[in-house]
Length: 391
Ligand code: NIG
Ligand code: FE
Image (cartoon, rainbow, N blue to C red; front, top):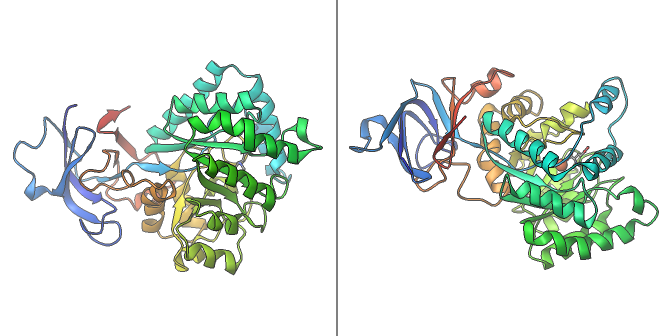
């Protein structure tokens, strides 16, 4: 694999405090060498090693940062819900029930169609700087359809989550506990080999505390790692259950009590906030400031799905988090990179120290602050994934 020297970096965000200033490890006038898929050297331009790399890219004083780590996505589905979105924007509320219409479209779709859609979304994400993306099942909700969703997802990413417990499908409407049993037995058996994570939508209208615990327990017993959709639409037990299971992440975390915040702060569980969901459901945003100030580790993710958040764009999420969730530009960029890595319990991505995966974004801007300062502007000029230039 060829090596690349990125020279002339005006502002390099390493996310490694030992390499530069502050928690973001910012280095002015820097350079970066990518070799064999990883970061081989990082430092000031004045100290670039002799004969550092075969190819030289001039950043021209612009900013470079790690690729975004989007730790929450539902990318295997068919159809869209534009009509539902339009109805919401004229006053209808968002409910978990809409998920079922995507379930029937997904079941009816061919594998090729699903794969095409997923590839399109992963490509779209990559062009806006996302180099790691998590993908959940959850729109199949039969043994075969969930397994198929994970197989399709596996063609496009390694971060795979079994979300059979997304909602109770219509055929089980009058016997939800039988559906939970199915998720915990045959569906889990079929899906666990393809997945790394187990997730549950713990919410009124989806799964209650007992059902959530049953699914997480079964998943963990089968070797999967827990994460939880928690406290999105209203207060509930999701955050506490996530902490109880030492989940890598509690996601949404919009409606929380002081006890929830305290539980997160004294745990390893990351709070993954999903600004696209509140934006697209016109709901109140989670209070990131309250979480950060309490010492909670916060990640930002896109939550791309056709119902509540049909975006793959992490710069958009950063801008909303800064404007409406009271994060600073520095906190939001950290949350979208190293925060995402923490939410996936990954140490190889989200930062640019020597040995990290060479996932790198060059911005058409002098600093990472422009990601929130210039909302909606496509600032991503170049992306390397595993050291390979994309696009
Ligand atoms: O994370 N909250 C549950 N799942 C998705 C929404 C899925 C849908 O509406 O289709 C979410 O927002
Ligand atoms: Fe989700």
